Image (cartoon, rainbow, N blue to C red; front, top):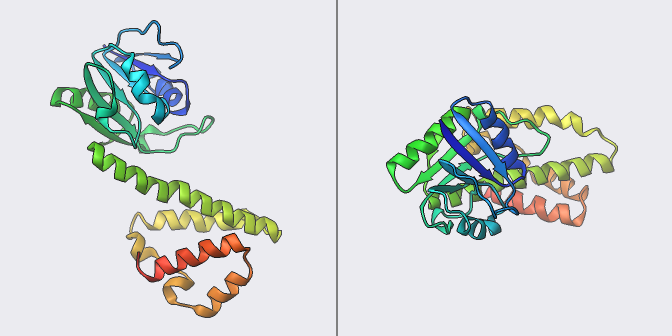
Length: 231
């Protein structure tokens, strides 16, 4: 049986802990990063804390194999003296939103083949989508994820604000949002692009700008120009 120690009490750590609890071949323990005076031994120690705390927390852990779950921190930023690795899940985690790990991509990195296979075993125990990803690749993935998740969600927020200002239910837009995401499973994002910017519909663009506040106008103009430039 493999033993797993999860260091951290945040969203990622808690979702991981609950997932491993359901795996017979894994015995999992979870501790807070604030209580590192007595650290249980484990086959794999997973540090799931904020990026800024990874170096300090890892420097206090003497277990043989230590990994972190960050998308933007390199494997070698771990400061433990033994073997290192990365167990990064490219997904957004919220406290009260259940996670289907079968749909979560696991991006794995280790210093040697045996440790990579160990991480693969963990990922396969709770999920299906597994990818070998280097530290440099993971950093670029993380930036891309900010665009497709964080920035996109901010655009949803702007759309919601516009609806609220004009007393229109935001739920009317939800089928369109779903269709947009479903479409890029079959088409590239460039092929799926529609709207006044790609058509260079100047009249509609002008009418839209007249309906927006100054901050919304800036964002609209930047995105319109980017679409028209093919960027």
